[in-house]
Length: 112
Length: 115
Image (cartoon, rainbow over all chains, first blue to last red; front, side, top):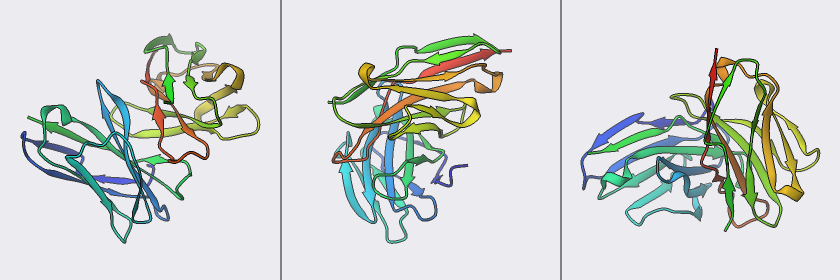
């Protein structure tokens, strides 16, 4: 157990819908990262937050957004969902902005 | 752009066999290197990491990796695998001092160890 928690574990929804994925970092970690793992794209970095502020953006679609709250938990919002958004979404956290990342169990999103 | 290559997509070994998984990266500057493992149905776990110093790094569960700068490689090794090592292994890099701490992952190597 890495200490990073993610909810829900599984999510099944329809095209066009909007969902929110939640991540709680390890105690004391200020940085949160989101990654998408799909069969065709592999593991791709989406976005990083550090102490409530966006730090870096990767291959994140405009339909996706994220935020980190004062208690340091983070949410990833996915809207206007498409079939191709079906994937495993991982959250990771690190103590600082540059430290080793520890991953949560992931949320498996299925878009039907 | 930086990239990571894992040339072995699927590896099948018998228990007690030795393991070496290849990882090459493309970036001319200083990188931090990682190996993560994903057991079936579980999250990514850190096996080992290299930031600086001794290029031979020892990790958990008897794994080690050697950083060879001239070859841009960071191969993972284990002298004797067990059935419980069946998992997917990911090599990852990030750029030291770069604009972001994002990890760039390889495509993964699926290891199946037969009892």
